[in-house]
Length: 378
Image (tube, rainbow, N blue to C red; front, side, top):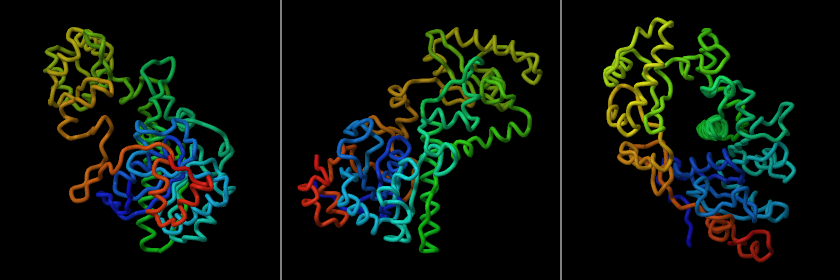
């Protein structure tokens, strides 16, 4: 395999990113950057991370993998050589780890003052919990986001790791990287981005803050406008035990819902009628299968859609028409009219491209590093 830089098709073509591999939000952020055309070189441990990488790890696609033993000085010097010509570095270590490897912001900015240094953590670079371990549900728990999730009043339901890791984490890291890159074009100077999942999740929840300020979001589950507290924004079981999502908030959409359901409902503006409306909707949706209801509401303004698993989502006609998925994985997003993003290479295991990637980035002693065990070629 021969690797060349500048082969991306997206708007970030020509941007060079050094990724110090982590798990979750860091790789997701670098996947986004790579899908959008950036040249990302992924520095991994020779043994790989938690999931071992490989051809099924979608989060590692669109960039080569280089396995370096960063406990060895020669490996650290190699990373510094990469940083010297990079625009961005992304790392997801606990605070202080990169500094102990002599790869912290101070060392990297001494080599490359214009470098944008992105730091991805759960708790942030400072604060009393900065050194504590944590995962998505812990981060969204203390921001007030997790408290209201779920329609079971007795306990919250955590939404996998979408809200914290990828919503408040990688998304905000990418926003920070892009903003800092724009600023660096003017100032000629880089800076450090402290992307903490707790900060991003709190920011994501701006509407929740608005509802709280207006007094329309009591601090209990299934009590607000968007959490199942209203019968016209909820989930209903169908005759075959599957479910439909109903989001008919606006009056005109609610009227369309009622028309297509062919049902009489009392005035929804009278809060005393909400329980009866919910009961009637529950009974009505159980009269047909999910497939039958999906056909009834297909393409209408009733704001109703079937709740389907990932395997079926890839076959949904709307998503097929848009090409939302490709080869079993999400396609690059968002869309660009002139410089579309693309998946430039499939995922590869740790060290799958060590020699080729280092050479493409101008490291002329790649073979020597491999022979010495500093780098590993799989």
